[in-house]
Image (cartoon, rainbow, N blue to C red; front, side):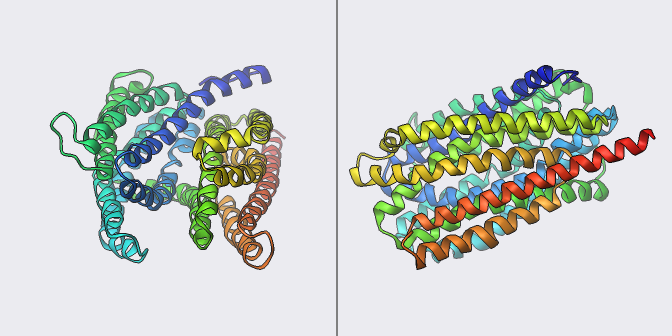
Length: 455
């Protein structure tokens, strides 16, 4: 990544970093899609089991992996400030922390997984598939968390295309092992949906081997000598990673778990409503990959400029990113509005489900507009290492405002199921506005600090 002098150069560099991140996020999203879809072709029980297992795993994984995202701004600041000697030390401490976190997840899963599944009143076969799927997936938790650390290091250097290629290579691996282990091909056991868990675990180990090989052998990563020596555990560095990462992780957890909570609360509605809600939410989550990717790209470029003390450039990058996100949201909004019935038909051939899904998708349009502001702004704030206030805002906007408002509207007004979506939209909008004000405040603070330095 290089210093840029004009807005045009900044736009070009941001796009070069952004596009591979977007492809990477879509690829990761596709992996979960193939697990669910291929299990569904085996049996309805396996589909339900894998879907339930995934719904329990995804909020936990995204929240905890969010903690490790702090490696990106830490490395970006070091590189931007020409302190390359500290990069390997920070990355290895991140790897140590990833291993500890993986172990804690495995231990916690051993004690809480069975009681949670038993309390859901599931069909015995569905419960078995969900339980065994999560156990199988657990075999790949350690490499998955370490891969996330290495991905943050690679992305922080602006080499997001490498991450994209690594992730793209995982898709065919995952699909092939899914096919062999779900359906019992080429002499392997026929495991049904549980096979998808083992396939994912194998894929994570392959990803780790590829990532380590690239970091060791390929420049510019090899120049940092990440694995050239053994570093002692540093509680001080862990504190730095956690101080920055825990608020990031909790912010992501609050955002992802709110949708799981709404789905749980909607279980009292009829099957058509639940199916329509899930279909619309799935497509909205797919579109969210755009602002999320812009957010991750902004963390890299803003962190690089802030680390180098070029605060004016950091401000320009922030608003270029938000502008791109808003523009993309308008395009996606038009697609949603005019093609909502066609989009709904992708998920179901049932006329009632298609009709209701297309209505839910109109509400999803407003998600896009709020996400176009809150996600990029959140990414820019992470580049400034400003995460604590963001965490509080996420908690308040989603859980204190959005969910209670949605519950009230759904259960005490004529809005019914749409009430939950209205509540979520309100929470997202309030979160977007408060984050926007926070970014403007931080930019003014850094600008004022720069002026005082030169006086």
